[in-house]
Image (cartoon, rainbow, N blue to C red; front, side, top):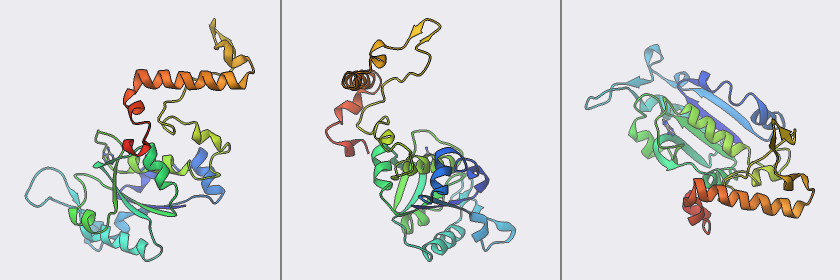
Length: 233
Ligand code: ADE
C-alpha cells in the first residue's frame, strides 16, 4: 500500500512512521509512506499557504492553490482509491473504516491546519472526510498518523502473527480481554488460574466471557451493533 500525506508541518510526522511496526512494514516493502510539504507547492511569495477567512473571523485558512497543486501533482503520478481530509466534522474513524481502507492500494491524506482548508478543495478533490474523535487537535497530522497506523497494521504480513490483528479490540465488536505475563504472582496479585491450566478451549471461552463482560460494562453500545459491523462505521 502507498500512503501520501500532504502537510503544512511535515516535521510533526517524522517520528510516528520511523519505529516499530510501521517501520518494519516499510522495510518489508509492504507499505510506502511519503510525506509532502505543502509549502513546496505554493506559487506565492514567502511560501505563503494560508490567508484570512472571507467574511472575517478568527484564524487562518489553508489557501486552495497550494493544496490543488499538491493534490494534482500526486494524482498525475498514480491513481488514488481515496483522497482523505482529516477533520473533526468528518465521518467517525472506526475499526470498520480501517478494515475497509486496508484493502486499498493508494491513499492520499490531507492534513488541515488553523481554521481548516478552503471549502472548494473539499468539494472538488476530497473523496472522504475522517474524524478521529469528538475533540479538536491542532492539525490533521496526528489524526493522519492515527489513521495510517490503524490501517497499515491490517495489511497482510505487517504483523508477525497474523491472528493478532484479528484479536484486537473492536475487530469483533468486543473490547479485548485482560492479558497477563510473568510472574504468575506479582506482589501477591495472582494471574487467573485458568490461564495457567494449559486447557486452550477453556482459556478461549474465559477470554470470550471476559471480553463480553468488559464490553457490557464499558461500551454496551458496541454489543447492540454487533449483528452489523457497518453500523458502527
Ligand atoms: N483535525 C483537528 N481535529 C481533528 C479530529 N478530531 N479528527 C481529525 N482531524 C482533526
